[in-house]
Length: 210
Image 1 (cartoon, rainbow, N blue to C red):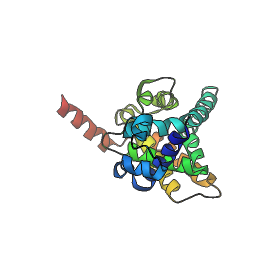
Image 2: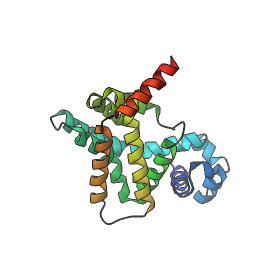
Image 3: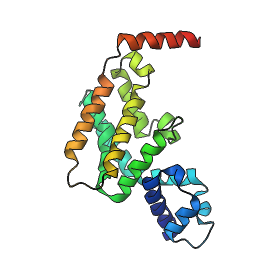
């Protein structure tokens, strides 16, 4: 990978994490990276979406390996909601240890917490993707109404927002308590019963759509 491409990615991570993806221009990324060629971003990434894909791809191998290992352990007998909550949280919480990882966490939460979330297509339909695999393993543990109301996405989004908040607060000497408690809360989100009121309102909504 070229030094210019790496510097552009470093600059994009820093700026996107500090100000949000929508507030940063491609020209500012060029300036932050000290790139002399005005077309360097387009050459290496094409556009903003290409930069985001490259940032996600930069961190994906370690996250994927960690999550698949935890899901392997789950399938080998470590059953229950909390091990699956841990498989969601721990692989990304490990990113808190360095500046690039903390920037990634803030960018991931930014693109996820939108009316039309920007997520890699593989997450939705590629069985080899660890998050897709996680969603498949969680589904049998959810109440039918909870699954229909997108409980898994609620858990993913909550974890992303909390990890981004932690990342913004700067490096810590120990993230173990934060991570363990976040796993507890994600497990509670996944396992919480759907109330009679929510069931009724969901049924009314579904009837209105027919």
